[in-house]
Length: 249
Image 1 (cartoon, rainbow, N blue to C red):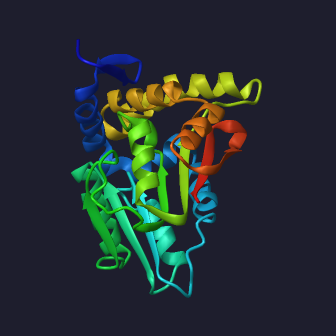
Image 2: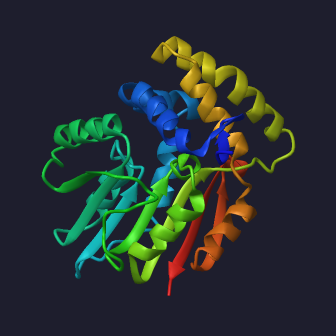
């Protein structure tokens, strides 16, 4: 019997999940920015600012940064702006549509030629070990079919002393807010998707994938098992999202 995994609340063959996720993001790529603003009331920008403030690229020495599942460039642009001429930023995504949107945005913001865009799988990174000083993945890890393999790959490509950072939706831990957030997620977000992007189903999957994702402590344990030291997390906005971190020491 074929190995199965979750696709939102559904069970699908493991071999089929990546293609289904790709289809979702092909559909949302052109409206990704506006939908993020509408779904989070602009909070995603604050979360990303707090997240990237933890990277601190060196101003003096060469600093290589890998942003995985970062096709549209939101994190990469922030890292490049915070760095210097010696900062190298690689944006990796499995979805060609998201990468195309990122290249378009990079050109618009005059980042074309300063960032490298790579189409590849988080479970099979096309880089040698000890290649990067920092690895980030923002709102992407929950869409990876085999999270443990992606974490192992993150550990492999980081240099000793390198930092792993993940920004992901989590479980609300404020009484009352949890029920409001659940109602908003399942009833309002698909409706916004239908009205603005013309299709509710991709956003229904995204909401279900958030609900299925492990709580912050369980995911911290996964990061530690992948070999990262000092694995920890910080909840933001009552636990709606969490920043996870670890070090390759």
